[in-house]
Image (cartoon, rainbow, N blue to C red; front, side, top):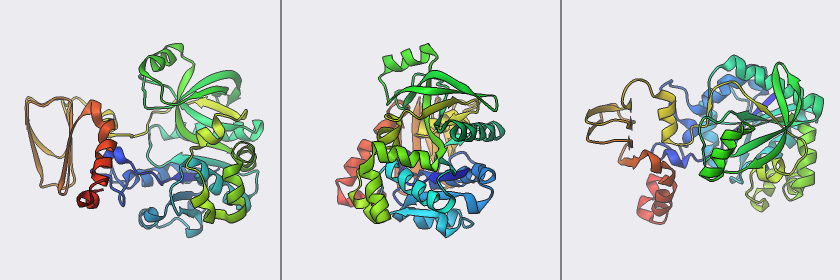
Length: 349
């Protein structure tokens, strides 16, 4: 497999720790000392057969950061987008480059840089099963995560007809994709037992994806085939889900058995690190009657003192302090928009 790491995201919901020049994928959020990008590379290296088989696609202003964090990555395997246009152009360009180097029968996998994954042996086995499915069925395989709660922030995949078993992993045709449903719909999906969360991980033969892009998104493929990455300013900002996956008849899903989290906002850190303690403390903290809170500080000398707080996130990064109720972390993006509109705060983005 040729794994490609999608590393162009902003991670705005982890502000103020995540900034424009230091986005979420460059951060270590689990206390391991390895950034999300580095951890993603670590778990894909064996499948790639080493650094020569691993690829990364990122935005121009992040390229130096990728090189710093992954010094062993060959420069030819780092694709730099002049501007972010979401995942459809990223998948199309990277797949074109891989097909030119390895041929259209090459098995390609795309992986976001901001996931946490447990049980690596099962993860690797599932990817090998997905590669077999892609090779034997001409499938575009996606990995489906068993939903643990009725999330309204994830996309959902409905399982259709069974499509066989690969390395003990059951595969299904995709019946439909649904983006970020409302609460009642998410609860119905969960109760049915037929739906998975869309992990955003895809495995396919290069030629299959290129053909589907040509069929369903020629407005992406044709400019890239003609002008290469110079076409980026003309390309629409569009996800691969919308451009291809919701339209193709080659979509398959493998429900997975390994633990997973997309680390989408500060609440994900609590899910990852919550133990028997009343709070998650990644900072020096002294509290009175404080529970269900998360604390993070980049300076070891900073002290956070709280009295009578519940279900709150407090993040201290240099000259910025964020205080937000846990059920409103999705609204951090709205605050960033307000900061963007005021020039005096641009240096904090």
